[in-house]
Image (cartoon, rainbow, N blue to C red; front, side, top):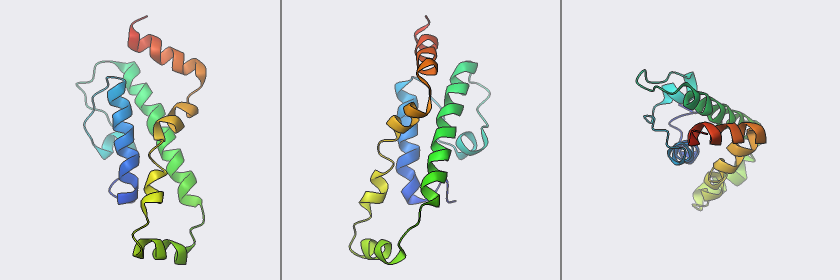
Length: 118
């Protein structure tokens, strides 16, 4: 639940799927893919799967990093009461930059070459 269906995590996963769409990779919105690495059999390109693996590893490591941070309970619940929890969700909005920073420059060029057919 906490990694897939949790409301604060939804912007993270949606950003990940938008990123895949930009790379012209179409995958079903399914937790088996992101959390377990189980991909549909009809996907033919092995390199696209490895790109997804890198992206999902970056996403999961980001979740683990943020999850470990101390949350001041009183401030958090006060923000919830005042309807100011948007700042927590915006943490995930720049996920594309985080994902790309996790991939070395060399691998980025390899991905572009593979996707572009170079």
